Length: 337
Image 1 (cartoon, one colour):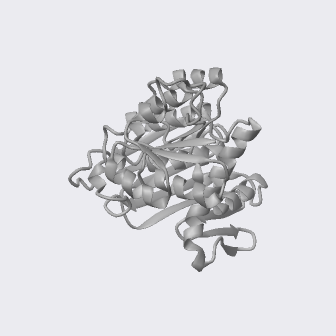
Image 2: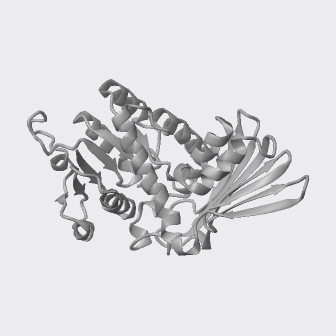
Image 3: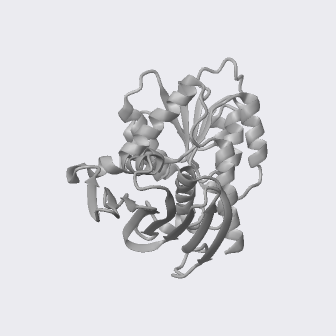
């Protein structure tokens, strides 16, 4: 299998390192990025073929039937605004595609991408790494088994400092750039909307209030949002996200009929409270000595899952149609905030 990773930033580098760590045999990894400095850095992890030009990397214009180096799988890890075009080009050469979240920065071209993927009969998965986190899985069990009855409301909070949480100069990252599809709504909230709608059902109403509060040089997008969602299950959820929290915060708390449960990704815990007994139980997901595993294991499991879906021909948990519904919520929040 020939794998092409498009984008040598932090997430592209993580995927490359994790594929090497998995020890898959008979795979060849190539990396494409217009930034030669990034390519030199990622080349330190292995003997990769590197490209600065996407068409060259995809072998466009060459004989697709004879070129043994043509990518079989393409990881789309470049800035958000380029996701759809890159994915289309990958499908055109017959590759399976993994797209980092969010799917895009607007709705343009998404319907055509869905049609192309279905026509080509190729697996296309959009990243949803938190769904593979062991803490989230514990929380999901509580929801599905109705341990504390039916869920009523939920609060997701995701905050980090854009000055510190990005590799390199924050001004050069997609997160800070409107043109590249940045801002907390498309960035952090794309995670939360996906896993919240997975737990509580389709979003049927959206309200949001967003603003650039911090007003630091080089950030021309919203750095704060309060988003309010109504689900077809009747559950009401709130998402609060920002780019100025120090230290980081990342948790999902659910109020049930008979209790409360909280998955705290930052603290590496799942807490549950039974109203009847007033008993609180806090479960540590990883040991303190396993902090890197606490973050990276979900990416490893996400990769394993993606390659299994290709092998088995099954629809991934977040395919293009589901990602389109998540995008509609995010774009709606941007428009009405």
